[in-house]
Picture 1 (spheres, rainbow, N blue to C red):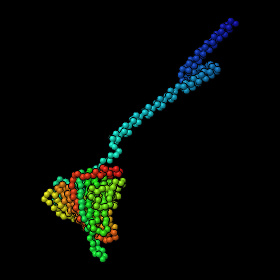
Picture 2: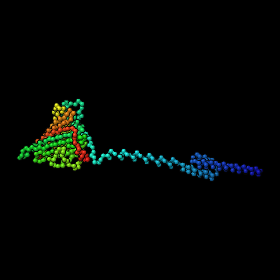
Picture 3: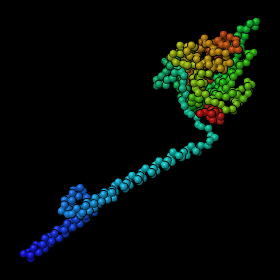
Picture 4: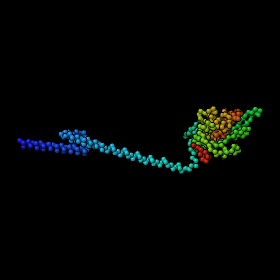
Length: 391
């Protein structure tokens, strides 16, 4: 009996030893799996269930090891977050060769080759005509067109001429009634010279008193380019030294004047066909066209002086030294032109009243002839002087 108990005790001891050995093997396997990689919640649950038969100390140690392994694995293995080469290195942003190197913008060899002292080339702007213009058409015949239709074509052709010159000379006759003396007749000479070449015009204006007790003498050289006018005075105030285009002019600096500023004081720019504004509203009548037998035509235009002379009176007041704007009673403009409507000569006859030096002159007449020629215009004064003041 005693022997049987000993055998049974031995068997139980052996069974317990085998059970403990099995638990140790499973614990070691679980530890290896946990250390080898991050454990999921399912794996941790299976490990805990397999260890339910183990003692509390072994289970606590296993859970502690599992928790530590899971935390360490989750913390140390995040390569996508801790290393972001695409964010920290942006070669496309930091290096912009196309922007930093712009030779076309920083280098302008075409400009640097021009000497600083060389004047700018003229601006070949087409002048603006105050008179109405119309391009001649095939089949147009001066003899069959109205007076204003011929004027419109003449203005267009002059506007598009490459170069031309104008020589104008006239006389102003003024009759004044003076108490105790009676009617006195005084005269002034008027000279106008123009040279136009591809957008630049030089104009010389000379007014000389011939026999009046009080002299009114004026002289200017004006350069018109684009919408700018620049004027200068003669070197000498002596009229005997004034000699048309050859007059000696001052070389002091001049200030540019805009087209609108110039017009408010002097009237129209020199580019214009006449000092009158000529269109269907300002021309009241005209004569029949006369063929001269030499390929040229002549026609006389009669402006409505209440509408067409606004710019004329500004110029007359300035050049004639008048106290106020003159008042026109009549005006006639006679033009001679060729079959292509190229103006060859222009003659004006004007009647008006004026006031100067406080004296009313109610009987004034002006007669002026302008002759046009084409080619050989001299605008050298633009290059040598005026160009440096054009903005």
